[in-house]
Image (cartoon, rainbow, N blue to C red; front, side):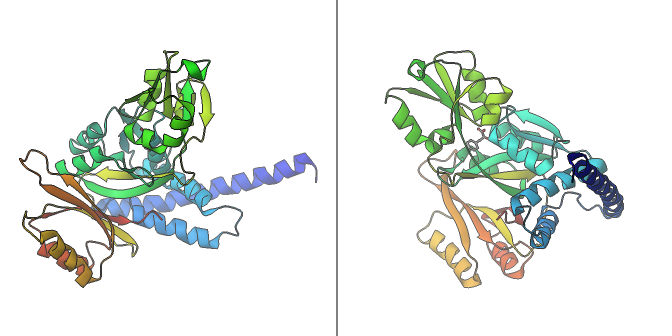
Length: 354
Ligand SMILES: O=C(O)C(=O)Cc1ccccc1
């Protein structure tokens, strides 16, 4: 076959794909019309996950499950945008890891609002300036993002979905020689993910400056020849700062979990769900042990429990952020939440990301 003949085959496939996508839009519109009359939500993360899983089992293997997910998340986002344009806030500026997580979930067409702090994302969703907010919650090597946990406790928002993403850092700087770098800007949890690189390449007295995000770090470092930023390669490219080193994270298994926040959001049961709660237990001996024993009795597995100080109190009092398997609408979960309704805040039941 000649190159032109091969290209003609590809063109024919593209035309069929376009015709199929347009047909799909017609059917999505019918669902949208039904949902509007039912007052049901258009964003259904658990249904999207089920579709991606079904397609991954059908694939002949030429497309990896990750590739299928990326293509279909974009298709879903375009369809939703067509039905009802979404405004999405994220921890910015442009080029942050959270920005990438937001775009993977909501596609390139959504109306994005980059905000300078995690707290401002919570505020924007709370005041309904935006429909959804995206924030980081934890890294598998460096642990929790405490601002997010504190805001989950403080604000009345729900978790609509989670998104897990591999994280690769670069060092970007306008400095010509690494010896000239005196300061490195980044987000606090980013320093903890690149400790080995920093120790190997820089003297112990190098100044590490924590800022609100890794893309903010690029902006701070941009015009100073003695500064560098630990950031995503895309942030360095967008803000035109040369990349000196890539893939400098301590572990190649580095991943971060992000949350999609919304006001008054409830997912339907998917059968593979996580529920997140915050428990403020009485300050009496054994209260945590008795609380956890109820999970054991109900056969519920915890995937996370972490304590955070209760702010604005004297002495040392704690709240616990807890993730466990199951959905609020399952009877055993419902009973447990009912029993502890006075000291538990339900944050959301959402489909597990992987
Ligand atoms: O600062 C960012 O770019 C973020 O989105 C938060 C973050 C920082 C480090 C790893 C993953 C997410």
